[in-house]
Length: 584
Ligand code: ADP
Ligand code: MG
Image (tube, rainbow, N blue to C red):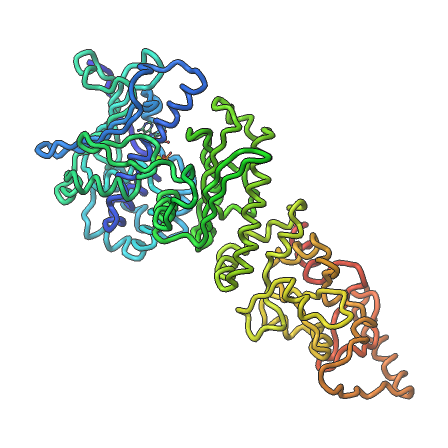
């Protein structure tokens, strides 16, 4: 008999199993999407090996995914002819959670407590439903939507199955097959497939056999399975057969001529790509021939990703070469500040066997990246010009990330034009203006765009530096986020205007502007009062010592008794605070 070993799942896996099996009941069907995606990934990897000339077992086997059921035995079977797994890969890949974010994710969503206690070996997925429902009752919807978006992977099969058997043969020529088995409650076993059973094992690739739970019989119904595959896996590049018939027949959408693709098809593809449940905010479908040839289908989701805590690193475009997936989430095709864009790029201008390591230095990739970036920025410009409300929605969802673009020197002007900001012109903190809007409202002779940093609108309005601007009716940008000031510093100017903090505004320049209202002439400082002020100023300087360079009388203020100014050209006071924090 072959060696038969039992292993324990890592603790975090147990916790995750518990969440999966108890919080996601409303959306159990996604387990099939996960298994089919894994099968497709395995086929992608195999095709990749083949395309660069590696030897694989049974090279003539068709690349496909077959789903079959045995109703009497309650077995759902998903088979692929992909790369398969060796004994060690079965242990490593199915015994630990690849995503380091899972633990943090659970903690952030308050799912850690209440589970730790029940997470001793064997108890995770096996305890009574009643207890589990109460311990996770606050989280389900949240967990369901988030896990639904990012995918939970292989373990989701335990939502519908009480035992799972994975038989796999690695694509390495001559590899033996192994069986992995588990009831998802804390341990799994791995054994080599011996002589007699070897014929039933896959010739190459993986067979997953799920023993379906009593309350999940729907997943033994052919029509149900077909519908799920069509909803979630329609665009996979390999044939998916359910009970002998091919279900997915839609070709790679990005390769289709734009005018033949319907809005519904775009939306379906977006959902398939992002696991999102609604429509994208924007769809960008481009086909470019020069300077490089490529096709891209990209989407702007309606919401930002940082809301979800984990997955900071999960961005980038999927790179295909002639429909062969070369790399998921490639990060050289888009700068980080456009990381909210999801999609695929397919090019004919790269060899299929390009190594993933050299992609980064590849000149074709760089050119595609530059063009894609320009396309996305151009699309946003068009959106801003044609639909300000929708653009504002974009800005609320992604503005924070977009601001990182202040380092993109090559696209500086476009970037600056796409910025939005609340200003003193608006009635409340919701209003947004572009720098061009601001310039359009600028006063005659105005050469500066002034800004002020403050945690919120109230604080900005209370800042004494703003008084003179209010008196003169001069518009000021309100910067509420720390990064804003870096953006202003990096830009320096926009069109013919200098970007300047209000505290650096030149007093003479400000004075030259006429006031909007009839100016209440402040009592001129009488000669005779001067000595009194001298004494006060001396006393203040005395008290403040080295903390200030000078204390002087100002005509700039009308409502406040005093304010801090920085010597011209030095950093603003809020920037100074930031820099101090950063130096620590
Ligand atoms: P992910 O797909 O995000 O990596 P999963 O939990 O879905 O996470 O799968 C874990 C790992 O198990 C995969 O990365 C892969 O290495 C392996 N795996 C799962 N299913 C298959 C399969 N059908 N063929 C080959 N390897 C697989
Ligand atoms: Mg997966």
